[in-house]
Image (cartoon, rainbow, N blue to C red; front, side):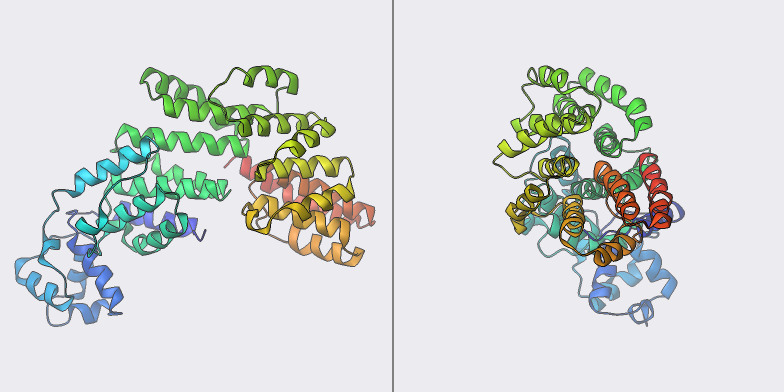
Length: 412
């Protein structure tokens, strides 16, 4: 997923600086149409109004004056409907929020209401339509169109964008980036409670992944209490499921097995992942491998801990067979791809090639993965490999380079 956090923060900063006057679709429609026509502000405003006036209109900082409206609509071939608020839009926006809150598919007839529209309102609803169907590539394409219109969005609209982007980043294992943009969302005050709960939920899930204990300690129990007291059981159960996997690192396998046997909402795959992680972290590697080998359905987390456990047991041949058995179409996890690449270099390449890889693709990269267990493994195994080759300077450099990155993730 192509997403620039620094750029997004700039959009957020501009929203604070720019006062949005009116949330009518006319401004964003003109801006989108002007960009389609590859016209500059000077060309778009020529003979009608000043450049400054058109810029402010596009960013909803002023309401369009009647004396300019007709000429602008004609120049950009835009319908007059854009000049006034759409009475059905707020209803559709609330419907999208409800769908996100309840993890439902956003049911809306885009063709009848928004088919020909090119403004920020239509784009946001299309984005929600595809996002709730987990069509993330289409969601990304719409985000690329709407990101230049961030300054015209209301607080609710902007919060919905943040929520969808954070969820997609989480899905793509970009946990640090997802956590960063949720920091923007929690600063927005005038939004419905449903938005606040959804943002809190994704922040806690990210904190579990990054082992960000401060967030877990501060927010988890408050969230559990709030969702229970307000009967938002779907949010309560979702976070409880995620907490089991988080706890698996610290709870002994036999205790965890008894605990999860009573949790009906946990799927068999979720139970298995938690048990395998627990066995791995408690160094019962043989049992972790045995459990992973029984699972017929592919899951990247299971393969990650199976490979980590096999490596701890130094089972080279089994590692290579396991990697070979993974369908290329299933390699969607960045962490699993990084781990497989590392193991292939470690066990199948010559010394000079391994050293080149370690220098340029482990300690030489700014970003490896946000998967904490894979990242910590890569750090310590790289140090070990350099030491085995008697490259002690690089062995020390590995810890010097990667340990601050790990600490930064945990304190995201």
